[in-house]
Image (cartoon, rainbow, N blue to C red; front, side, top):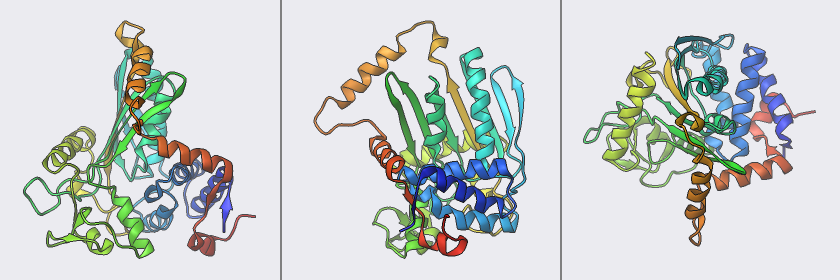
Length: 331
């Protein structure tokens, strides 16, 4: 078993990407994102993405040497160009700038354009919440969900994430796709040759399917039916129209090396609770968390993720056999 520490895994993954024409800065950002997702049990956004990313690099769908740039358009708004590179360096830049601007203005927003797959969105908002800020993240993705009553995909799975600081404890983090499950779960099932549960996806003819390959040719089932498609439309406005990025129906796939760069978008909001003229936020959050956990079996979002992260910090993560066969073992 190829079990390694988190730190060693990050070095290993960064080395792979640098060896395929990616800058040191971007390679480190990608490695942190993929290894972090793997440690949290989010395998659809973890190391399983490496072969796909490398194929996209080779085909020019991701520019490994891209350097994101930021323009402060107004006091509380940023426009960030990911330059068809990996999303992660652009998100790192956005979060660093937003943490400063939100302290000045109370609320700050960053719009990222010409971007790509953004991975586990919860990680991005979590880092802002760790600095005492409330954070929201909206990302559009290639078409996967049909409008309510339709059969042809127009919207992406269009994930959203939210995080809020909780005094004396890790932040509350909510991270969800607007499909019944994240598309990455279906990708992971296809790679393993496993069936998917009923209710996750429809095939190209609009019929329910448990075949992961057929699901990827069809559409995802929206979370909550028509309510989920309405939220997917909202994210399309916030993450694509607002950022001047490609709409989901215009974006090439995150899952293969075909076509031009996806050119998707992301929008991040950061809110400083201290900017609203009172000091009750921490006390209110503590009371809310206590009430949420008071009932037997009740828990706050993210507890499983935190437990898996703690376990990985102690015992490391397992590198997939196919990855080690292709790139060699550590050491």
